[in-house]
Length: 178
Image 1 (cartoon, rainbow, N blue to C red):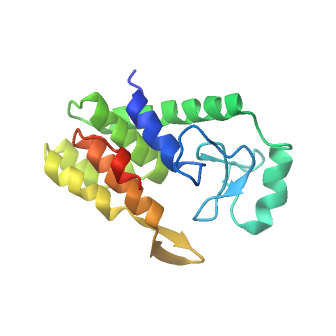
Image 2 (cartoon, rainbow, N blue to C red; image 1 turned 90 degrees about the vertical axis):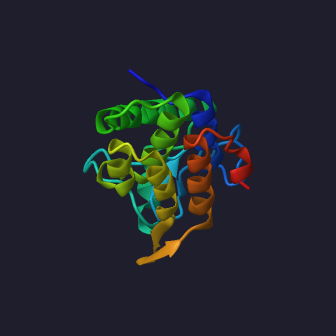
């Protein structure tokens, strides 16, 4: 089974759970992500075990903190991220029908981990049709999030999609994170 490579892992960590963009730091306490989902570590969305649904909005804060009293350790954050990315890598492997290099695959894992939308995207349709340039151009269409009921462009998503596209196209992504 394929997994995200070290470069892709750095990319994910640069955008998930660390407001400073430093992939060596992580938020060890539950926090609301930009679209209102309770999250911990590097982008681990917190689901209520009783319902299986992600916790959303300020009203769910007490439940998020109840599920993670005292937060988590750095090692637990690493374990959650690796498990989440392995699940995402399986999804990407099942959806993509053409050969990919390690950076292309990793960029798609980052994209799908963040959006959960690879399977329904035009990006995937173009990719599976062999249109790599067209697929790369599609990253930039996924820069909006629902905030307070409105779909708005989020600067962090603009930077992330630019970084994912650069990685997909075989370039370094680090300069795209700023």
